Length: 371
Image 1 (cartoon, rainbow, N blue to C red):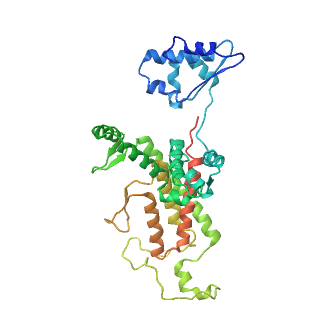
Image 2: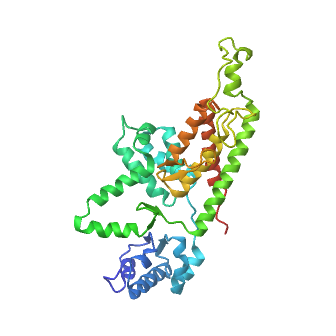
Image 3: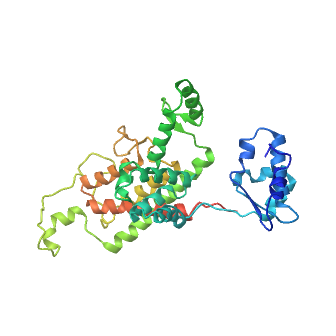
């Protein structure tokens, strides 16, 4: 707008008859982030205000601005008055809206989207900062890998999901930067993170966010346990020890008892406390429900599955387990409960599913902004 003395007036003067001018400005916050001239900033704000206040109503002005920049427009009284009287607060997209973002454009070009894929995409981006850019990046990659005019869950899983798609885009962008400029870009990126005791970059967490995370994982664990035990006593399934040793009493002629079978988790193992088969129903797995809820909460909080961490056990001091992904930890928990004879695999897998649903429900209904 700096190329003419009054560009909006010039545009209005060229309108035919009863026509109106629609002036749409997206990302108005760039008035502060991209513009370095106070004079140009003030002129732009004044131009928008005058267009909206056109006495003949020939102009309609629509602006979109991030909420955290809203207060900064108080420095421009004319525009601030218009914003205050006419603003519409747009919240984050809900699950149903995100699903429409996936399905409706595909439907217009006769592209089939597997329902399971739509579920996975929505689950992976809902509640994330920048959900739409994440979703668009994943959808572009899925489009490039489409098979028989269809977008499939299998391809999405093979490619590593939303965050791996973003990582590949970032790596591809970085590879196109001239070599002499790469150290500058790397230095800028590393300033956004800290370092652990070694040289591995780690994400900074403020005290407030750390407190929020602790509250979230404790609530996730509690709700996971409640959901699990409600299900346990509804189903009342036998543990593997009873089901295998006493199979001749279960009323199923196809099962054969093995009274000598013992789980690996045996009271004779030298651990404190001792490892025993718990005296309550088997299905679903309590570890699966609680760990699934906690680990999926971690995953959503950090916005990625790829976070390195160690787990220390009071039963086996000095033998920490290291994981590079939250899902790998959850998979090992499932395997450990099966190998130890505490659960049948179905109980662990379904427990993890319950945990994921608990984390999703918590994300949608708890820890919401209070105005």
